[in-house]
Length: 223
Image 1 (cartoon, helix red, strand yellow):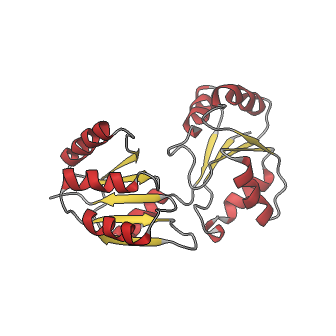
Image 2 (cartoon, helix red, strand yellow):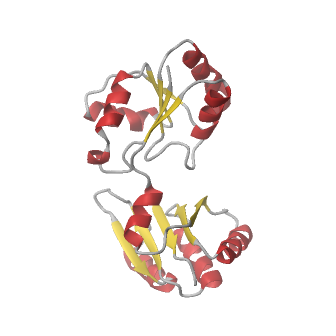
């Protein structure tokens, strides 16, 4: 049986596909980045498939277990906390191992914050760079931003609430007052999407007080 790579909602549960629900219900086991978050989704749709954790800190131990099930003919559905597995999570390792063993891997596509942000940015996206998360240390972050500036392509990356201000300041230093999209809590109740300069975004953050939620940033290609 295959390893199914199943995309799940990044916030709004109505974004889940009918196919994803069917696969999650029919699978023998669901491998989750966080079983508690996935269980909330499954409970909402009345799905009782057993779950097991598969995340950054147990991937080396749990990977062989999941591979063993696949070799026995069991079907495993791989999900991340939100969005598409394999993007900024360890899911690619299980996919790689399954392919190396000659086992079928089936994508069940759906939501991803990368494409959701790009779709509302109104910027050229025929070619873009997805960066994941920028380096935490300020020197490495600035150096990476300078490298991205040289690509002359639209850049998309994620950022956490406690680093968003420092990242916007670093973008201002490297890219200047370019208009970029900052999307917070995409598809969730308090979704906020704004296109503005780094300084304007910083002002909005200051007015809002403590930053909350997860951020997706889109810097347009500079022509």
